[in-house]
Amino acid sequence: MENYLSLFETYNVPAAFWVNIQLSFWAAIWALAIGTVLALFRISPIPSLQLFGAAYVNIFRNTPLTIILAFGFLGLFSVMQISLASDLNISLFRIAIVGLSLYHAAFVCEAIRSGVNTVPLGQAEAARAIGLSFLPAARLIILPQAFRGAIAPLGNVLIALIKNSTVAAAGSVATESSGLMKTMIEFRSDLVIPIFLTFALGFVILVIPIGLLTTWASRKLAVAR
Amino acid sequence: MSAQQVLFDAPGPRGRRNILIGNIVGALIVLGILAWVISALAGKGQLTAGMWTPFLESRTWQFFILPGLLNTLKAAGISIVTSVLFGLVFGIGRLSHSAPIRWIAGIVVEFLRAVPVLLMMIFFWLALGSSGSVNPEDAPLIAVVLALTLYNGSVIAELVRSGVHGLPKGQREAGMAIGLTRNQSLRNIEVPQALIAMLPALISQFVVILKDSALGFIITYPELLQFTRRLGVGEGNVIPSLFVAAAIFILINFALSTLATRLSVLLSFRTKGRKPAAKGSIALDASTPAPT
Image 1 (cartoon, one colour):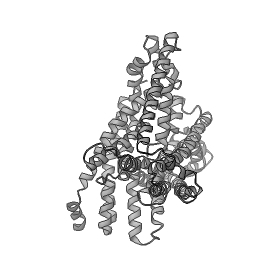
Image 2 (image 1 turned 90 degrees about the vertical axis):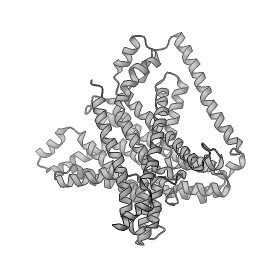
Image 3 (image 1 turned 180 degrees about the vertical axis):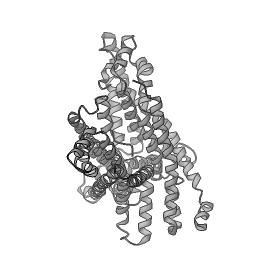
Image 4 (image 1 turned 90 degrees about the horizontal axis):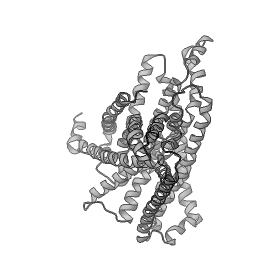
């Protein structure tokens, strides 16, 4: 037990989780923005934008996140020498955020599209009947209802994003929790199970409230029909 | 709203002109982004013939890509079988008549679904490696399979549970009426029907398993990404190698996703009438792979 507690003096576990939370926070904002635009593209009347939206979703949804984040480090950072900050670690951190955002935007787009599917046909017909064209109809009538219908799937994407932020290890973000867990186990292989349970419990504590909250919100905010 | 074309009217002359303008502008922007990416790649010398010719040689495929793909398919294939078994056992456990079994299965499934797959993978890899109970060379494969099984098995357990809940109540009542016990009716009547209804979602989960097998890269399992990285470092063409690896994953996963979508359309006829409220959304939800 003393051995176990002394680990926390040597290694800063909360700081590692904080890195994951930051990665998830910024990636969630960007993914929501990109995903909403993609969803608009996919339901728009313009064929080239529809095609782009569909191609984007199919490419990013079917690529392993590990490849995208490894590409960020091996390709963008090492070969292309793209840097998003003067500091090396901050640059890798931002490249990981870009990778996480691009990947999860595809799932946000599909979540919003499934929300659009919950909006009854009559709503769109009514919007047209009062003379709204595509963008005003989407902005005033369809999307507000679609977001309310998409809370549960969007919550699932957020939960997946938080868990997937550990994959940033493939993009050489060494300070996040899966990297720290590996280091800790390598130095204290006698405590492998308590160390794993600590990190696992950390994610349970992060993820389960979000699941409960989005389930509650999706019921509370569902459009009564 | 399944027919999304109702969002806009059948366009008149002005509408057609606006759509045409939008179409051209949109296409130009997309092409502009593509041209920018291509010129950036070309600027770093990534598009010269020498970067790509290794993929025309048989030794590249023989010694790098095919062995990697084989290892990826091996890990994914074993994990698919074991996670379906795990999912069936725990899914039936969550529906069990006895409360303790239900609770235990519930806690296990909820816990495993909340823990990142990568954490489990690293844990099993290091724990197996230091315990000495398995051959150190086998530790990465076993860790990949164990982690994928525990996570995806839990997701499949939830699919089984929701599939059984989606069945009409009459199915179980009919089973009881002909003298089956609750467990017998669950195993012989409800779960087989639920399995067919959840087939599209199950296939989407296989896509997740295949994608997540690439996490083995981080724990030194020699799968496709690991081999293509070695190839890229050896030949000095890391970016083309990663593109080829991604393309292979996309092709396989796209084929599986298409199969899932087709199946869900096909099966919506079989399961029609059960959930008449939202036809369109069910088809979309079932065939939409989860992000992990």
